[in-house]
Image 1 (cartoon, rainbow, N blue to C red):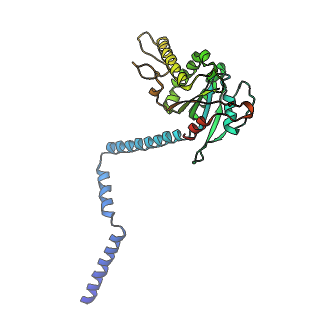
Image 2: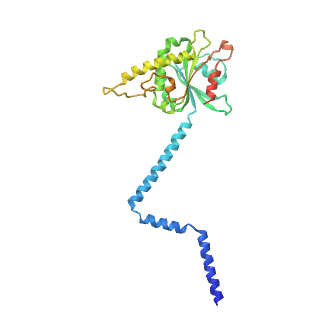
Image 3: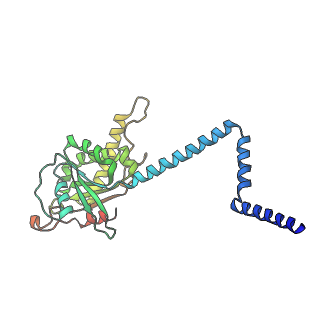
Length: 277
């Protein structure tokens, strides 16, 4: 009889051990449930709201960071007749192509010359003054890089117009926030009178410094504050491209090439820059 009682006790103990093994956290869960039930409902609502805010913030940050990585466009911009469209053709096929003033955008996949096999969407934007803003607005969100094409041969005559277009680009809030790489391609270096990239950079910095003063004065309200676009560069200092939030590079190139239509373009420097994006 005693043996039967002992056996029964051992069986019950074994069963209890099995139950504890199957759910070792049950005591803690029960304790936590009891504590939650004892809390003030207002406190619980506050905790739930706080958790919801954290979750929403994480989702927003993930979306924001992801949106920065999907920018795959390389925009070719510049004044009319700067050689953008020929440069567009040379980058894509290497071939010379007779062009005319663009009145709409052109786009095509461009495979960068690097080991990663990077592919960007190369977009040639119209250079006419009446169309620039419209197409820039359309594509600026997608810009990974902006190639600003300058006619080096007649730069001295166009320096004011080039600077004004650059000023619009560099003080745009979206472009400043996304900070796409900026490559100033000093084109038509095959022409004898072409200005060097270094000289073009220096003159543009002076012109943009002057523009900044006149534009800021024009936009100033009666109380002395400035509204509208961003302030270019650093206040209290003469403007330099090194003050901008994006990487800026000036380089020399020739979409036509030194041998004309039958030769190759001199765009190796630009191709190397695009390979680093």
